[in-house]
Image 1 (cartoon, helix red, strand yellow):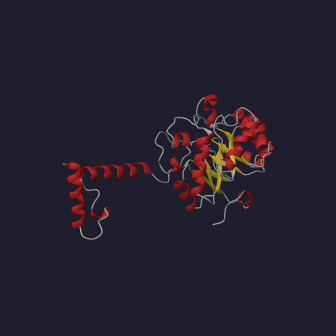
Image 2: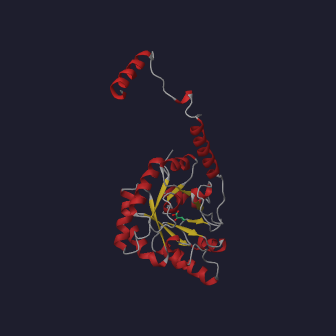
Image 3: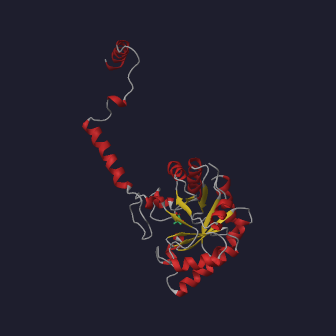
Length: 287
Ligand code: KIV
């Protein structure tokens, strides 16, 4: 399998071929994504909620992200991997943003980074691009700012809000971003962004009229139990399957049904010398 690059993604846009994009945070699921032929993986800061058990993405650190990126890269060596800059890694200055983006590439092995925000992060995008790093902008609903937005709320649903989203989209492209992710805005607004921009535009909960779709893998397979956003289509319901398997395992242990004959390693040769050995140890340690 040939490794996907930015050129493949731009060619897909040119040919009107939609890109599939999913989150992963570890090697096994990354390898499943690669085996399924998914075009891109996002090592999202959603890892904080999906795998670390936090109730928001705010506590996620650079070190956590780097570790998860490394695991994903090991699991999916040929997939285009995007590292998600966590809260606090780019807000304070252009220099800090560039330094942390460099860490994602050098230590995390990713192909590109994503950061949240529009006009307000234009100089950060420029600083990171100036380091020769591919950048995904992320506008609309930006979970790291959910406090300011008053919760995880869809954006661009009023004319005033749509104007702000469109201005953000233009600012992100103008700052030099190579790609844009639009989250939770009406499809009409997504279509307008797609028409205005020349860079590939992807959606998470922002409808179909763009160059591809992203989802959080745990929502898509019914693994994340806390809540399911409206825009998720579930392709599997794995939580009850896993819980049932764990329950059967526990019941089997308690009932003496596991392990069975087929799950053990037998001694090689006659048991008699082993019995002599056990008798020797019994004599020494049990008497
Ligand atoms: O962290 C993440 O998975 C994301 C998506 C919600 C877009 O940023």
